[in-house]
Length: 143
Image (tube, rainbow, N blue to C red; front, side, top):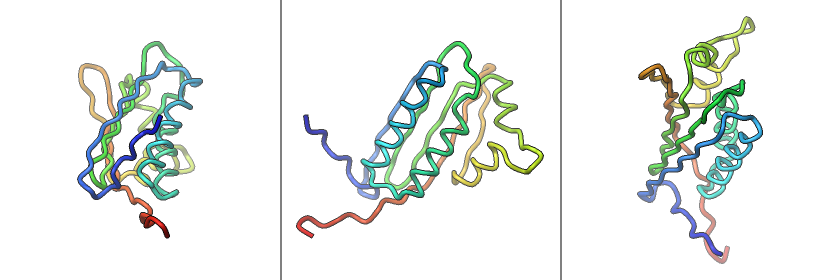
C-alpha cells in the first residue's frame, strides 16, 4: 500500500500526530520510531531529527508508573508545536532539576526547542514546546 507523501514544510501543510503509550520503557521506542518516521516524511535535517530524539529522551518519564503518557506533535509549515504529558509533581521537579555539573533536562530543552513551558492544570503537568524545523532541499525529479 502506498502512503501519500506529506507536502514539504513551507507549502501550507498542517498536520497532527497523537501518540498515547503505557508508561513503560519498552513502549518508548515506539515514540522514537514515530518521530523518526515523521522526520523522514518531512525530509528534516539530521540535526533537527537528532534534536527531537534527544528532547524526547529527556521528556519521557524515567520511572514507570500507572497510566499513560501522550505525545502530541503538530506541524504547520516550518513550525513543530507539541506537548508531552501528563506528569505528576515529582516528575515536574525532575524536569526542572539541573545537576551539579550544570546539565539537566532544562538545559537540553532550552538548547533543542525555540521555546518550552510547563503548564500545570488540575494536578497534571504538560510540557509544551515549539521548534522551527529545517527541511533538506527537495531533489528535482530526474536529477
